[in-house]
Image (cartoon, rainbow, N blue to C red):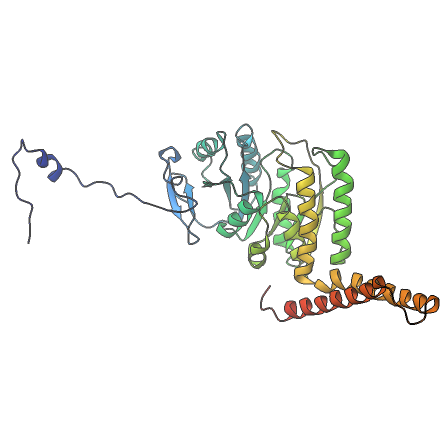
Length: 358
């Protein structure tokens, strides 16, 4: 057996050879590098099967709960602790076991420090820090994937939603197996640009109702509870932004998963809104059309195709009467365009029907 030769006590190598074994360093790469083992965390970091590092309290994650509350946080340091107080209080008084998975979306304020400090008061809090900002949809998607509860609750950390109603939403799912999602339908609009948001959201909601053949009282409420197992196939469809809540609604409805709506109030948010009216409204409309195209492309493409063909044929008859055997380019273009869109609709529907899974 090879041994290190003894070094004189005054030799500089003596201290190195006789030093205590150094602590093993967990080196990580990728999105979470440098965040999980922060000494300020004060607890234990758990690396999940998905490659994410979740910070737990001193006692570790504990047994798997029945409910996981996914709480995305971006620059919410001034009030996120108050929101955690509200959620923890009502869940402690309920009969449900729970965890609160707080996702710091690379906040530039003290949100992460506040969340880590809250772990010392609330053992059910788990913290997932992001190195880069990914958006509300990314945080909710990853949070749902990493959730250990059978029921997942989405809400916001901006003091707008009635989070006191969370146990009620969970009980509906527990007691009625016919529902797969429960949504807190807001009765008022308190967001910024209210004069423009109300008609825009009404129009988008009506488009979604027409496309899904379902009445939708609130298309993009951020307060909802759903069965995690049912949601897993649809998580890959979620966009990075605010329209993730719209996406999960349409995905459930398009696949015959029943949703129950419960009226809730909606308060003026604390802090600064991250919603940008023009850009986010545009993305909402695109996401609604994208989701229905994904599940039922005939609903979107076939009506305009048939209208174009019909108008083209009517115009062709008129042209034939006015100028026998002369068809203007506009007439030919209408008919040909309608046929091309109809062919695309049929081809898209064939792809959807032949797709395995979702």
